[in-house]
Image (tube, rainbow, N blue to C red; front, top):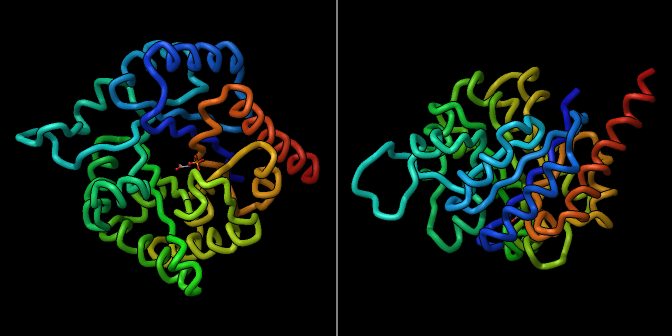
Length: 263
Ligand code: PGA
């Protein structure tokens, strides 16, 4: 059975004092291992501070929001995998729609970044998702499948097994519009079968695939119940301590219910 995971993507939000405050609150509240894994992805300039706060807290992982695929060189403003290694980062969000949209990241760049992240031992959180025009044309599945295939290009099954994939329909990000559990599950199932095509059935059952886009505790109850939805990539709601904890609790509850069905 796959463990659920809730990942907070803080984006370009919070100042240093607020970032520290939120991290301390999470650290104080998450003292024991629960079935749901937890990760936060602060802005890169705060990564070292946040990793240091969480050094002795193995239950909260730290991720970066982006990474360049080159290891060093004349790339002003970029962050290399070697640098992230020094910051005790375990995960990296790759191909977020905001990076694709505002920073022109192509499927090819994303594939190179996934490869670089794997080479340096990070867990890539590989994001895919369609925009509203594509959704309204009824082409969401085709678009997302294409993104998945491009992202996984030339990866071995062993490498694919290490990925987390996040399905984030662009029209649902930060808009308050949520893709229904049923629709999200449908696309996530398609992503899982694409992963199977590129690896094996066994590996496709191990890869965690998350939903993201206006996730909040009052709408996520529906999504997290679907067995193919393995958690959430959470933007806005991850900046609010109480909301983030509620999302983790929701995922833990689903796990406990599933366990009790198995007994
Ligand atoms: P949102 O962002 O939860 O604020 O919609 C999600 C994301 O972009 O990862």
